[in-house]
Picture (cartoon, each protein chain N blue to C red):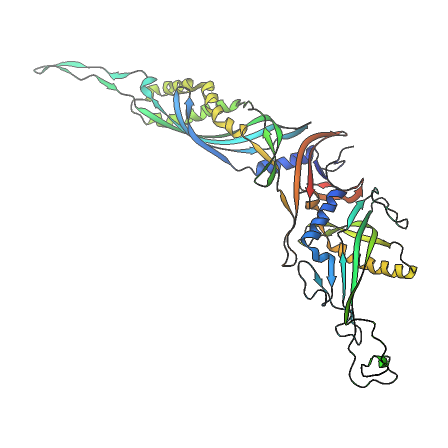
Length: 267
Length: 236
């Protein structure tokens, strides 16, 4: 029999994980990725919010609707010549008496390459299983809930909203280009079509998945030389015990599933 | 039956771990088990606690004494360790067993050199008196005896010295076995009852330590003694 037993019911585990997940600091990353046919550089940050905890014996903590709030700034460059038709003012010739035939040169518009910055923030939810992991490293006992596998992130309506955001971001930039007027709608549609829903999912997935796939939620973190009482004076030094062993499990006790930690100690 | 029952959090500590905690306290702060007056313990240190001598007229500095207690071994209900028949361990109680050594500094007293009155009880002690009785004591002699003490008690929910929720061991009854005459046994039991109440009340173990720091627990049920354990239930 374990010397020390501590247990939480599912409601308690929910409260514990609410706190533990909220204490995970904001994570951020930057880099570049494929946005459809374009290459976008990005800076992204993400934070996590606990969902609903389901304890599953013998060692799984399932969190339904684990929420990832993310905020991304990205920009990508487009050579408009690749999506818009060449636009030329044709040569015009007129006969001028005493002068002869005069022609204007043919003038072709060289569509520029533009950079489109986009800011977007949203959240996704995922269902994830976590397995209890116990370690003693550097004299510290840790029990963590470590995510099992890589959850499938469902972006859903997020992608449509992000496409709309890209459309909004690109329009004022295009409006500043001479002669673009007749081609504005064509250019916007061409850009959005080129990116597409699949392009956005392919862009966001690899960026946001690491924020979820690497989650370790701290459950227990105590020094092996555990302080019972702090030093209070020269004649009352600190009192310590040694935590010799820690175990963690999900147990089905009676009608409840409980998160159970056990410890053995010595003086 | 679940561990948490109707609460969100449960914690228990088995009597073996409780004894480890008490041993740790007594090992790191041994002065809580050793008390003595100046000829034994001139100053309080980590190892010993200095106390005044017992004042008595004619004894300079009073009667010097020392008590040295062993680390108590606690047995939580249900009973595991044997007890003398006078003690019965009931539900919610703990029993304890420890050694106690009591000493006094038995000294020959230098009497007042002023001429004694003939009817003074110290008349015969005048070293100038040719009728002085034979000296049966050396100048100073350490006189000690050891006892094994059994006790019964219950838990009290208290605050530790650092303000944390804690438990303390409250002594209800003390028993010393086979001392005659019976009145002497009763006297010593009462003396040790008072001493052990005071000593054990100072060994305050934080609830945080009783659960090795696992989870938070604001107790709503307990701490109570059941099944050789101290159990607590409550909220996060």
